[in-house]
Length: 264
Image 1 (cartoon, one colour):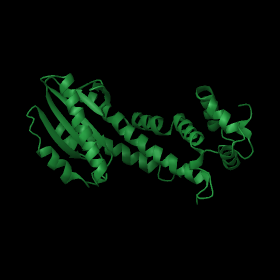
Image 2 (cartoon, one colour):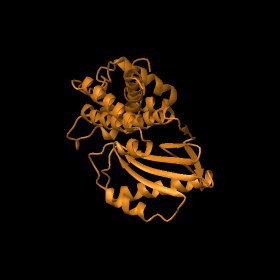
Image 3 (spheres, rainbow, N blue to C red):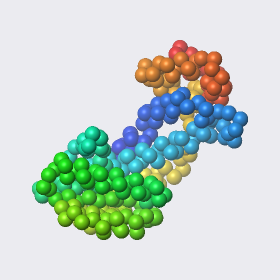
Image 4 (spheres, one colour):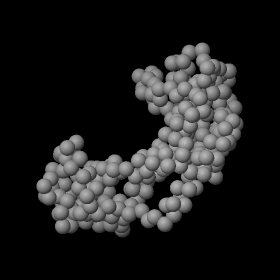
């Protein structure tokens, strides 16, 4: 994959117009999160926190998207990532096959979960394996947990203990950190090296960038997002334009001149 394709996909996934829409929608649905006397930060500071969190989540989604592309490039067949099992719809990070084996990869950026979340994550992992067995009967399954950032391995001992207790001979369980997935499963360390190279180059290009919040009062991007919300959820715009005290305070902080609210 060329760096240009990599960068375009990253920018589209993380920094596209949908980011402004999602952040604005969150603000309008939950005004109390951004206003009030018992908040040391103002609404704009809180927005920076929200945007940062959103970008981190979207970065995880981006790494999933990139791995799916690489899996196809390596000659595997990507399978439908949604299966229904026991009246539940399950979504898989990576589900693919070769001639003889079904592969599952559940991926996270880093292994830093607390004890409650790690147990839930592993239980979810096992439930997805059951769904695969139910759909692809009599197939060998290799199910992997992969943490792309190998600098944190907080729960490695727990995951290995759980995997080592597996007694199902039709399922092989694996735990990988960082390059181990490409080195030990795919035997394609060159792809990991390419991914790391692209990430380093992109981080270097962004090294002088400072995350900023669009001016809700005047920016064209926010005006566009407001119009989109009006089309999709007009009641939210009605609340924003109302005399409700929460929304009046929100408007004072984020839409002080009312420029972007005109014509809504």
